[in-house]
Amino acid sequence: TGSEAWRTLAMPWFRQPHHILSQLLGFGTTVWLCRKVGCWASSFGRLGTLVLRLVHRERPTRRTPDYGHLLLDPLYPGRRPSAEASARARELAEESRGANSRETELQLLGQAVLLSPCDAALYLARAEAYLRWAQPVDALDDADLCVSLDPSSVDGWLVKGRAERALGRTADAALSLQAGLRLQPEHTGLVGQLAQVRA
Image 1 (cartoon, helix red, strand yellow):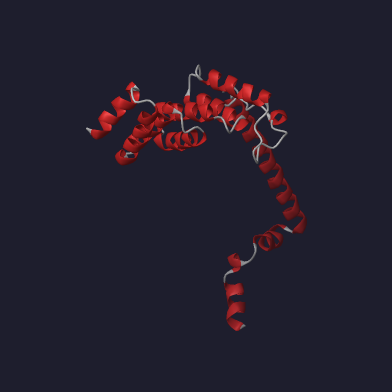
Image 2: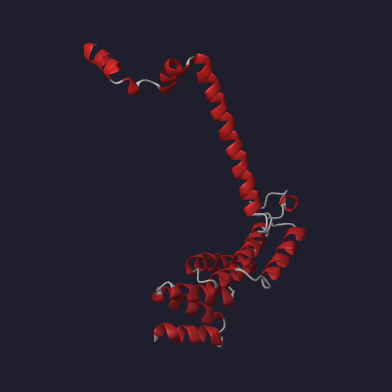
């Protein structure tokens, strides 16, 4: 239309940039300039990658081991992990006790649970670790799994009650602690936690 033609003539900066460059510099010069810009961008990208490598070179990271050979057989339905996988899971749980950081401890316990997902003791160990690192929501999730897999786990009911109490769920905490006391009435930890919940 006439108005569109007027805008195109009156405001040439609305045209596409490569058309403007072609008119100002010529087609050959425009192609050469675009290639140069691309080379500069690639060089800056390689330089940035090199700088990042130099910055992070002194920061060692723990590489997650590959346990695929221990998980070749599917675990479900109803199939338990191999003896080798279970043994390695217990080793990782024991190794996590000497970990000096939250990330390392939880990473080791996560690998252990992956290798032996039906071992209630592993969920209990990770729930206790979550509580130590002030993560009661995650602790409650693992404690629930622990007592689901092993309802006779007194320590599982204790950790579950502690996590619920940390979340302000005192009624649920009392029920969990009482469930543990039905299994072991003289358990001092359960008795002490229940007294604090009722206070």
